[in-house]
Image (cartoon, rainbow, N blue to C red; front, top):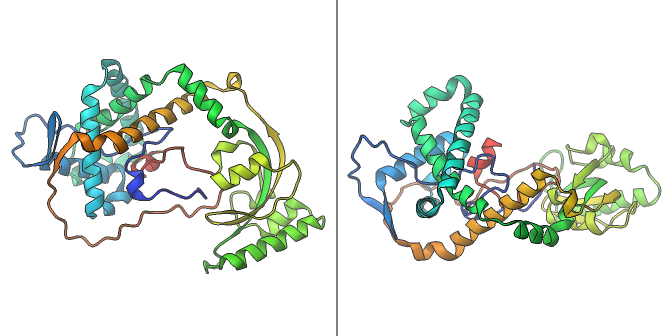
Length: 352
């Protein structure tokens, strides 16, 4: 669950999850080599093309890996963005090192095994329904993971240290309590910002008067993730929180009741009980890998934003008759945690 301001789906398309447990942005998968593809090119780029059949196959793979995202495949701008990503991954995979490709193949096998296990008895029937094979899925994964692994292998130790210094506040570990008053009430009715702020100030007044924070949280907080625990989040790295909440947790004097802190979902009254800074030497291997993943993601986003347009030569997608809206999905949860530093589309989220 998240209280962070989620990026729109258009932006999500050019992001790669820092954790990359599945790392599956749309990328062109391998067609069956036994069938000649005579369909027209829907994209041409420096060094290659993507055909209509390849693109259709990719969309079917996406529907299996991310059913909740299937509705967006009928939106023109979304489909074009997907296709442009395919170009990026085709192009970058072709330039990746052999080591990156080998790592990608190993990781793809692991992820397919996990995916099959998760789907259970429905695996075969789902693939049959979409007219795809396991080789199609594997080709799709290998292509994307090759690019990711290549980006990852290029990250140096010095870059990791520099990134840590720039973001070391995210690694500070704190125990804190909060009371959340949401912009919607228990019945789902919207509150105005003024109404929400007034309720939050009422809670702060009770705490300032000496009320027990844990009891107040149990009574008034609308965060199901911490309400029953007295509003506490214990020993969590501050980088897991959304920006406004994180900033308050980093700067609020210990054992002080905060003024209302506004985030996407409402106002928080906070109290930081303990806060411990972390040095680079104390980082776990997992945390260092997380920084590397973040830097790899940024490299990919930079390519998408700055270099991709110069790679694409033409896009020739057939028009869709769908009238689906262009708004992205949102996460309606209330735990004040942030998504990975580079958020992934639903294909990645669903695999976590």
